[in-house]
Every structure is written in structure tokens, then in C-alpha cells.
Length: 392
Image (cartoon, rainbow, N blue to C red; front, side, top):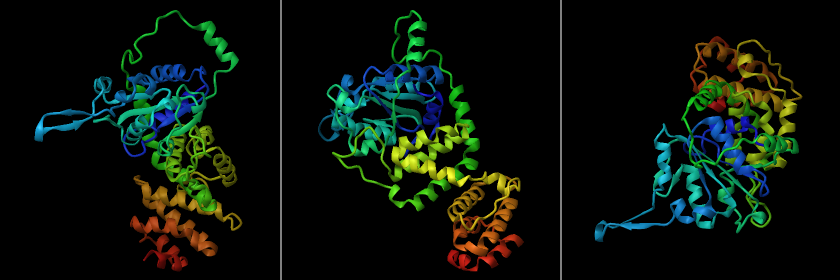
């Protein structure tokens, strides 16, 4: 069963190039309840417009890939049809969810249209408001009716989750508690209520600058220690289209998604999010790496609440901590920024006694931010003369 907290993360994670929402697809066998449960949970949890599209049902015309000509002679123009259902998002404040059901029935032509929908929120000649999210569900191609493998560019634009059908107990509860009612219009939302999204977005926005530095630094540390895990090209005929593989875009999405999860207090979702973004094998290795670091909270270190002691035997940990501290101070907008910068200079002075090269990134952030004129900064720069030369 889908975890509602996971949907929260997907809804609030920034889009790849435009808008809101991490693009996600849930893969599973037929009759596992994917479409029904996902649609019900989204409608009930967020109270926003919800439109379900099925490539097999709507065909290429339904995805704006069948052009038509308007005008005559020199004024003739080729246009792509704008679907009537897009109006539902304009009637509120531009928030909602497009749910692409049975995505593995999408023909190559429709998959090309989906590329632009996922990246730029454009379908045909229509661009959706930034608040429209896109999620999908599908059967693996071998079990889909007239199924198609997803093209590698489409695979790389999606987070891939493996759907777990309801447990026997959950299924029993559903069967015994289902009320009597007729199915309503699939796009009906009842009373529009932006409160759920407002609360999630406000929480993440307030926590983003303090949460992202540690998440990003941890990923950077892992990739520098494991360069082969940064990017692996999709191999047609070997890789399957319903599982993620490591890529630069995937890691970017993973960092954003984990930042959102941590901002909302959902830190236990890290492994699930990384697996969906860069693959199961890499996720296992990253999880093991993360557990060995035991990272302190950057804000607590810079405010003197938690000490950071450099261990020469764990240079990898020091590198991650310094990168997180440098990023935090660079993005800090509070009145304590100058004091925090001095604390960081003191940390760099200490680390610089034995591992000055690890201080380069953090020192650069301080210098570029104009936080290099204090007594603490001067003292640390004397210790880090060779690093300072690298900055000039």
C-alpha cells in the first residue's frame, strides 16, 4: 500500500525543470489496486483537481500529438489541440494532479509527448500552471495489454516505485467496510481546499535552507567516494524500464526529495526515495555509507550547541560535515550568520592543522560571501595559506 507521507514528498518536491512535484510512476501487476488506491488517496488527502489519463483509452489525440491546420495561405499555422480537461486546473489556483494511468500502454508517439509533460508541464500547445503535479502507474510491459517499453529518456524523468498490493488484512478491511455508492465523475473533486498543500509547502520552505546542506553534502561525499555510482547509461535490452538507474538527474531528484522528506520529519523514507531515483543496488550502498557518517546538525554545530571534533581517521566524514557547514552559512539569511561564519572559521582552523585540503569548499563559500574579514577568519586563513592561494 502507498504511504500517504510518500505522496506528500512527491507532491512538494520541486519539478525537474519547471513547476512542482517529483514525477513518479508506480509499477505493479494487474489488479493490484494501483489506480483505485492512488486516485482515492490523492483526492482525499489534497482536495485538488485530479485528472486521470490513459494512453490506451485516449490515444494520441488525447495527448496533443495530432496536429491540425488553421488559417489559409500565408496565415496558415500548424497547431496542436488543447484538451478540454485542462480547464479544471484554471478554475482553482493552478494546483492539481495529472495521473497517467497504464503508462506502459503509451505508444512511442505518446511517450514523446509525455517527455515534455514531465519536464516542462507542456502538453500539445498548452502549458500547465506550476502547481500541477504528474504521477503515473503502470503494469510492467510484459503484463500490460499491448504494452510498450518506456524509452530511456522517459525512464530517466521518473522516480520508479514498486507497488506492493494491499496485505490480506488490508484487503479484508476494504471488502468489509466498503460503503454503498455509485462511482462519480473521475475528475470530480468536491470542495476545493488548498490548505493541505499550503501547509506542506510552508513547512518545506521554512526548513529547506537548514536541511538541504547536510543531505547534499552526504550525497556529494558518497559520489566522490564511489564515482562509478554517479552515472550509468541505460542499456536497451539489458536494463528494464520499470526500475531506476544511477544518473546525474536521478541524484538531483534524490537530494531534493530527501530534503523535502527531512523537512517534513519523514527521514525514514530516505532508502525508498533513493531507490526510486537511482536504483536499488546503489540505494543499499548509499544507506550503508550514510549510517557510518553519524552527521551532526549543521545549525547546532554553528550555534555552539554540538561540538564537531575532526577525526583524522575519518576524512570522509569531515569532508561531508565541512561541505554541509559551508553550504549552510552561504544560504543563511539570519542575524546569526556572521557569528556562525566565525564558528566555521574556527572549525576550519582546527581541521587545517592536518587536513587543509578538506577545507577548500567551505573556505570558498565564506570568501565568496564576504565573510572573511573577522579576527577568526584572519587566523584561520593564516593556517590555510595554501588553501587561500587556491581561492585567489
